[in-house]
Image (cartoon, helix red, strand yellow):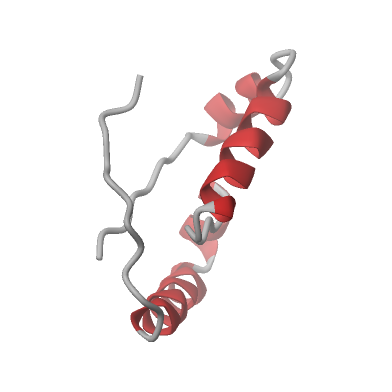
Length: 80
């Protein structure tokens, strides 16, 4: 099982959040991954800094739940 993360700085997130089409593309990626059984979790940089234990506990819980599920036939490829 592999977990992949992508982070943005607070300022970086604020800048891309207002790029036309950014939110729609992000939601479309989330929908595609969810349709294949991939659990997508969202944590803001602020939450990671201020509540790291909660974030870790959420990730551990999600991983434990996924261990009970069959392995998904997913192949990782390098991003663009």
